[in-house]
Length: 622
Image (cartoon, rainbow, N blue to C red; front, side, top):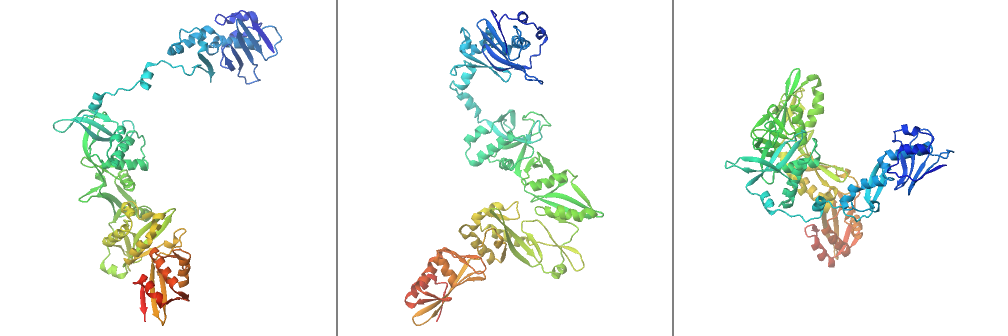
């Protein structure tokens, strides 16, 4: 261990040349690279230092400044009674590096602390070390007050965080100036190509036109003054698109877009045309109308050997617009005669975009057409009407050749906790979901392909019959080929029994019920029939409880009543459901008589009372 003491020194005046008197190796003066030196620990007037080395572990040097003496020690084995090369290098580093020197040089330390002290009003204090702690953290100096309650006197911060805010009532009244008109502006972001909406306000001329300046409004504060839930959703949706930087929208953002299009505040809508000016002004704002697209898509396939040509058009209630005349604006809107129509279904939008980016007409060579028809056109028909111009409607002769009689079918399927209800019409051997746009084709005995027209009236009535059975179905009339219910709602209060009865009475076949997960229920409502034959002192009651084509035996019914259950175990493994209002009535029969095979013997004295319970179901044979 090499140790040495420098006496009668002051760090404020100490220089490297003073060190030459205390060492026999002056090579340290040439070294100006101090980046490899670092303190293991350091505090006022004391530090333990070493250096980074890729060879052996570097020696550790300890420096302590006490009074006017500098105590130095090194972990090396230097035998001389002078400073070793490691000690001189460290002292040299301390003298040159301000971040280290300030721990030993009182003058430099006070000079460094003074700006910090002024914030607290301590610049005239004699010993600033009493009030401030200096730390060396990650290669930087960190100065903190030792007394945590010390308050920095920063007027701006205190005004912001402490002084009561004084609201300017005149400014507030001016901000709600009723002479200004609030408007909704649609446009594209200046730097990105995504859709933005903004609320703005401007004064109006006597002619009803906007006057500059057109000032933006922050939508978020308006939420607190909104009067209806829909208004709240509108302001929130506007705020979403004011701060949105995505070109591909999430489902939540698409829902927000629908709310904006509804425009519940009936604001006037303007399109910001950046081709006129980049800034929003009365000159660059074009008045437009806002709505949801009320049109269907129709694709038409023409056979033009050796190709098949496919074109598209929008079918409005009173006119059609071919795709070549359709103008897409802001990704989600069709623009026509200053009208922005929001395309609210993504599948329709994808078809329009695809045709617009492929010259609005598709040519498919006949060698690839059948493959294209099956893989592309057929799936599209689930949502879009495809008119195969080259296929003619069936003639009367062709229709008579085959049976195209109709049958109404409901298919049930379950996915996790939801049950899908798909209404289908069968035309002879062909089936089609009523919500599909798919067309029906067949061939005659000569192999000629023809089109079978679907019965739109029948399908519409069938759809209405489904919708009437549950209030949730009213909101599910667009977007899917099926209706759906949560399993709990499907089973709630035996809803499915009422619905199935109604559908069967209208000639509907219901398939898939027994394939639902964890389901052993019988799909038929119980029907009871009680046949009475008379004896001298007793009556024989033959009780029949049927569930569709299955009947429950007397013993099966008795077991259910005895177990206080409403589920009857049937021979096919299903469970029939006894109506709650019947359970007590049937129980009275069992209490009044005795079981004899499939008959219930009831003494005449008890019969009148129990027979009245099932007046409609009792048939008395004398």
